[in-house]
Length: 306
Image (tube, rainbow, N blue to C red; front, top):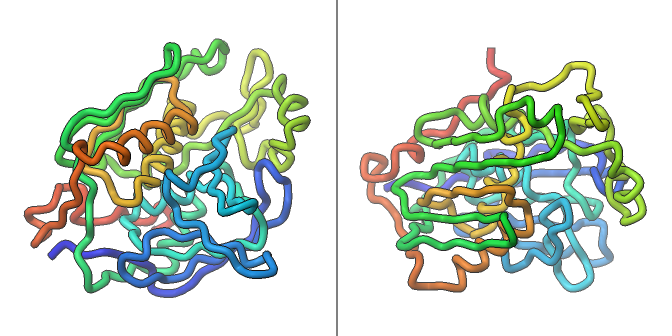
């Protein structure tokens, strides 16, 4: 039987919220089978849980934000992507602030934390959401689509009217069965533009942003001394975000995702449309690794290993 996974022991780190600018202590803890990924605000008078589900997303302005009443947990997408990349099904994420720390702007730190905690295989079948028919959403010239596919493959195209972005690869495809999430996607950082800073700050966003946790561009060039980690880092980060957003379906997907200029809002709309159409999917398990999709047989090694 192909089985669920959690971590062996708890691990923790401290960082800063990209949008809030506040210090955040984050702790990852093992969770029982069929728990899913659950964020928990420990700083509230009564600790409050936020299941990582698309239907719990209450805001998509530059991040995927889970809500529970008037409380929220922001910027969950990079950690969610790391869980997908390492095959983690069940996990508690404790936070003492409203936002997951941005770390270096990618999913790398979360991959490292999960790997450091160790992966524990659990005594319950891993459940997948298998797509049965295409689901598509559109807004103006932007679109996102999920199609049936026995595996998990993503295709993303970006279009920014900026010379530094235009000089990079703007289309990226990634197949979990053929490529390494850890090596090829996890290190892609979020990015932003200097000319948008004042607008973001006026909205209470971007207060923790810096050259240490984002690629920053002025009107013509990249300001980070080290430049880009990949020739197509902008497109890869948008694909990383999409992996995290699609994870809010609540199960690992057996599907192909394709998108043009999509973001958190359209991604969330796509997952909600999927879940709302119960003829479009089914939950499946596999009796053996051999019968499971190829990508599911192993999780990727740590990029920090010698």
